[in-house]
Image 1 (cartoon, rainbow, N blue to C red):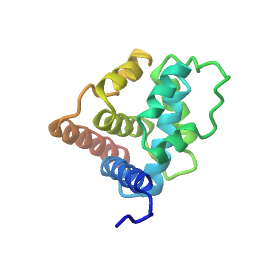
Image 2 (cartoon, rainbow, N blue to C red):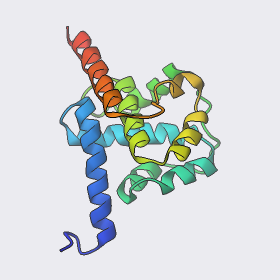
Image 3 (cartoon, one colour):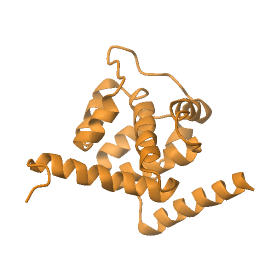
Length: 164
């Protein structure tokens, strides 16, 4: 029996919850923060890549996440021209300022890892290559279980060093 009465809603709820769970595994057990992180990273990427590529990426997102992706979008505006990792991280930090403190780099890595795991590889590569090289370096090319564990350890180590 369907929980919502429509299979498409059940599927998007399940997939979105899976994505949020994976982000929470990397950043901590706060679903609201995971939702904000997912939106901030997706919007920063969306605003940097060409409109046509942005539309193709959105077609791969779960229905709920697609709404988050298009939130505050101005398709007539030219793509952002930020060129450095610092500019990208500043955009994320600003968008995440209304949540508990989250390292923008950790946020980007967590979302990029989720996208790599759940979006077709060809689409991921097109989006990755539309980004500046130093931002692309944060985006894993493939995510194996060992790579995921390494990412989580690196994030934990950075969190511990900030707290010390």
